[in-house]
Structure formats: structure tokens, C-alpha cells
Amino acid sequence: MSAREQARNQGGRPRDSRVDDAIASAVRELLSEVGYTRLTMAEVAARAGVGKAAIYRRHATKQEMIFDVLLPDRFLAVPPDRGSLRADLAAVLAEIADSLALPPQGTVPGLLADIHADPALRERFDEKYLGVQHHTLTEILDRAAARGELTTRPDPATLNALLVGPVFAWLFLLSESPAQLPALTSTLLDAALALISPEAEPPVPGRTNSAPFDA
Image (cartoon, rainbow, N blue to C red; front, side, top):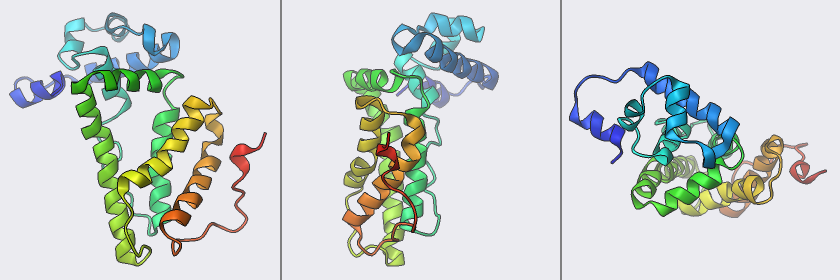
């Protein structure tokens, strides 16, 4: 359990949301200026205009602080209902792609490495991020089955890997441009739907799926 959650469970004086906002703004600014590796709690406190104690009451470590800033509590918490399997998955994939592409270069790979090195942080990551993704995709697939778009429901974890894995590779292994993510995600959706549901909504006529790989 994080320091923030412990404080919330113990009750007491409500936190000042202005301090939370100042810390979050400082984290984002410093990630852009000095990068993930060089960012320190002391620099965040100085930039936010608060004492380090105020940060430690909310976040036990630098990694937890950045994790909480980059992954807001309601991230993917409400599964979209756009009327079709493709539209629902497109909304989820767009939100995930944005969450991976928006942080400054090096932030996501560095944070993930530290998360996997810390069992407590890994548990929070699984609950807050992977767990929520799994729940969201499960609800979307259940709705699609009820609408008759799926004859059998695929494993949500497999679908997650099919959709998110290529986005991660595009950004962090191949170092390609985030500007081409919309075209890439469209291609990914077509490929994933062809695998899991031949009966799913077909591609929109005229859409060019080769765009993300053009020079």
C-alpha cells in the first residue's frame, strides 16, 4: 500500500489538492527538462514550492510519485461503449497509446524497469494499470458477445498483448514517431479483429492501413 493510500485509510486532515497539483506539474516539467533518471524528489519539492515532507506523505518513492502522476486514478476505469467491438477497442487503444507516447522519451522504459525491480510497486502497477485494462477489455468483449459480434470470447490478456505490444515496440524499441500512432493503431485493430472475430465490423472502405510504415 502506498503512503498516499495509508494516509487516506487513516483519516485525518484532508490533503490540499493545490499541493497535489503543484507536485504533478513539477514532475511533468522536470521529466521534460532533466529526464527520468536525473529527476529527484528534492528537485520536485523545490519546483513545486513545497517541503519534501509533503511529497513523502503522498509518495514513498520517486518511482511511486511518477507512477501516480502518469497514471491517474480513473485511467481506463470506465470501459467505453461506442456501439461496436471495433469502436470500443479503438477508444481503449487510443487512450493507452496516448499514455505511452505523452511522457518524455525514456520515462516509460525507465519506470517499467524500476517497477519490475520493486515487488510492492509491481503489485500496485498490476492492480492499477494491468488489472484495470483486463477488467475493461473483459467488459468490452462480454458486450461484443452479447451483441453477436463474437462467437467465442478471446482471452483479454492475449488481446491486450496483441494491441499494446506493437505500440510499445513502435515507440520504445523502434523509436518511431508518435505522430504515426493513429494509423498504426488502425492497422492493429484490423489485424486483431481478423484474428479474434471474422464477424466483427470490417475496415472502413478507403482507409489506408499502410500509412504507419510509409516513409
